[in-house]
Length: 266
Image: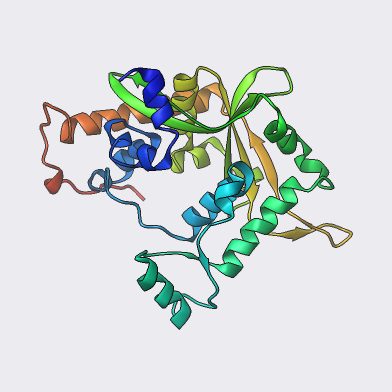
């Protein structure tokens, strides 16, 4: 299949995350190969952080999808309403309504014209040349990779750039290159810059509401441009992960994944 047709097909979440997309490696695979070889290509258990991040992305980038985002009006996950929802919908996890509304509050704050510190985000999103949820594929280090950019747009200098939005429970201003390494964000930055052939930036938004001197609610916002050191660290993490892939899953695999175990120095 031609690359252009593959990329068009990968625009569908069903194909990107399903069987068709599994022929390509991704940064999620790199993180799994680095952290626990046995978790490679295993279904990820949903949790509040993952679902909150997905809802936030839809509110900013895919408004139509956000209108139908699943949630249940229950006080706790032990409540009857919550358990009934899981059983009726054959799912293992769903956001409670109050959790989803907390995320919507953040997205509404970001998109509010009165929020001066997020004007740059609205400018990026509203640029008529912007592309949202844009996939691509590329051959890197002898392997086929896929990636899906949250947003491809022009920055203040007029250069095209990839923007990746992330919510966080931490204060994003405190992040270091080691923070990016622990979450696998440096390898994502490296892969996306290589695959798309353009610069890459993160926009982190804290989920903890704060009050200013006038009593108005705000959230921490931090734009992060990965440095050359961070990108090089990401490149090394990809190479290390691919070595593990070859050892356990490659055509000439020399190790049995069933005999593997996690080694840590703490």
